[in-house]
Length: 288
Length: 259
Image 1 (tube, rainbow over the protein chains, first blue to last red):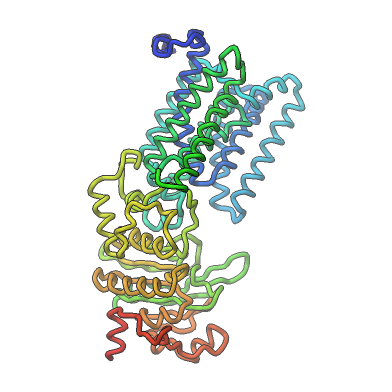
Image 2: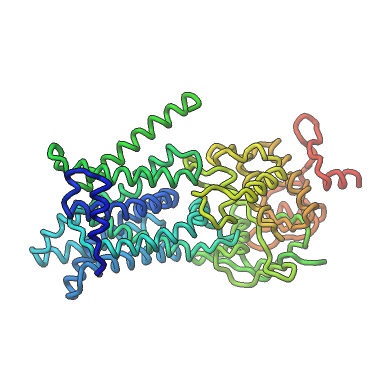
């Protein structure tokens, strides 16, 4: 296993906050610095594709994935992302080939996943304790192994974004138009759905099932209000997501706050969104 | 006569209901071919089959110049999130630029965007966001995007929908000029007989089946129009414009008048 201690030491030196001297806080910071750019970049496309319900359904498959692992005596750390990936690709496939509306397809998957997770939990009471961890998330328990896996996903996802961002915007506008103009729509959609499923699964561990969609949507929504082009929207979303993640982690560790980290991150991001609404209102009144 | 598109016994069924029934028709190369018919006649379905968006029986042949034919497509309307901060220059570059738009637009692509916008007389829109465009402006930008493909076949779904009367005429004149200059084949769906009589050189009358096909003056007869629209239409007097003006100055209209 790669030793990440030098990285943690560097972060502690760069950000000399008292709360960041603890190892688990340094690990959480690294985890968030990897996760925030991914959710920001994917969030832009989720907003563009109107796929927030899709992300919600994936996040709700987290518990079913863990339950499946326990049921089959497999490591839940692997069954959860693998199950999420399957669900993501399954929904995308059904959306493409079914005549049902997208909301209906996701709604059916959503119900089945929640019911499956609850059915397993009801069989084994000890699993109910884990349920709370998935509802609220806990970035402070992230391990070095998870950070390395997150690094791998970060590299894959950012490469995909760099290669596909323009085409994903095209498809989001109108898939028929994109296809007629020789964009490979199906490949891009499946790759996007698969990577989004994996990001959501990691994000569930950080902010919990209830807030994972917010982590995708809120920075992208605020960025849309600040930005004047699709290019600058990316940088705005990145800045908002990273600042909310770091500020949320630091604030949640203060003695006067002692709040859940995931919820604090989302509250900071929502603060950014409120500010973006003020900027939009001011722009409407006069040139800014 | 060279053929750009040939529909050969194209049949589309959905839920057991026949939408297109053994449609056999052609679009001559370099022509302005209009597919006309009442609502529910299957006009847009035929276009979607051509674009490969829906499954169909039969065959559709497209001829390219020794390569896969390039299609430029202008949809009837673009349903999109108008709050999305996507500029017109980004919109025109995103299908061509490899580098993500976060790093800006290549100078050459920006220049090409300006040039293609100038072709559709919309160069002033280059830095506007697409959500801020009017119906007519958006249609010009969509036409510019289709022209950026350097198409062999330009497909338009209801080119006059969402555009005001004056804008429609300007749009059609533009299309006529571009088709002649660039030599592409224009295939459009329209329910607007005035547009068709002005601009089409070939007409396919469709009402689930092909009722008639050929040059407009020979095809848009009282008899054929009654057959497909189900009531007495008569030949539309395409010159009956408001204010007694012969507004359309497209080359084809002038030729037709002269002739």
